[in-house]
Length: 90
Image (cartoon, rainbow, N blue to C red; front, top):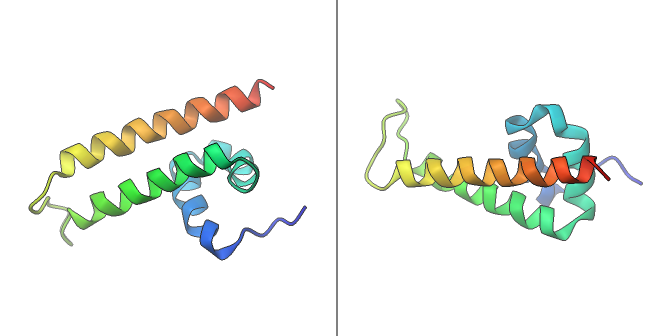
């Protein structure tokens, strides 16, 4: 098994692994082998991008609902963490 991720997965992996660094090795494996996990991680990546678009360079919120996107990012982080925990038990 190759340790390199496809370029299209590398940025998604980096975002999730930065958020949950204690699980980075399992994240790397799951993101390349588990379609359901990849979908969750892709949603997380998209939500993070949407949140970033709502923050200006000084970190102040701009027009749009940064609070909503923050909640979505937190929910997806919890879902990913739960999914990882369930895979560790196997």
